[in-house]
Structures are given as C-alpha cells and as structure tokens.
Image (cartoon, rainbow, N blue to C red):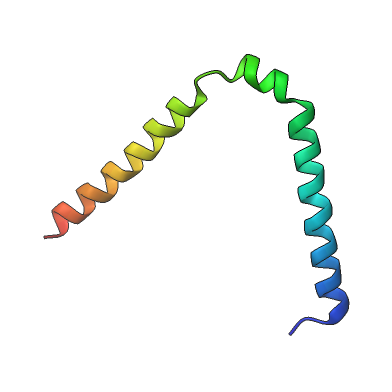
Length: 62
C-alpha cells in the first residue's frame, strides 16, 4: 500500500512537526498564560454541552 519512502517521509514529517510545535508552544508560553486565563472553563462548558446532546439523544431514543 505504501512504499518505504512514503513511510520514511511520514515518520520524518511527524517528528519534525511535533518538535516544531513544542518549540513554538514553549516560546509563547508567557503570552498564553497572560491572554488565555480561564480558557479551560470554555472547554468544560463545550464538553458539557456535547455530553448533554448525547444524553438527550439517548433519552429520546428509548
């Protein structure tokens, strides 16, 4: 299905991409702490809303 070259490229790309993402995140860590305080609350509300939709779907299905 995939050649050895394609697998090598995919592995190389993933390693370089993850390394770059870690580097950029660490570089901007001070800005993240300053401007994105409390963003976990938005994530929790969003996940709660999705869970509510699933519960409504299961409840109405019965």
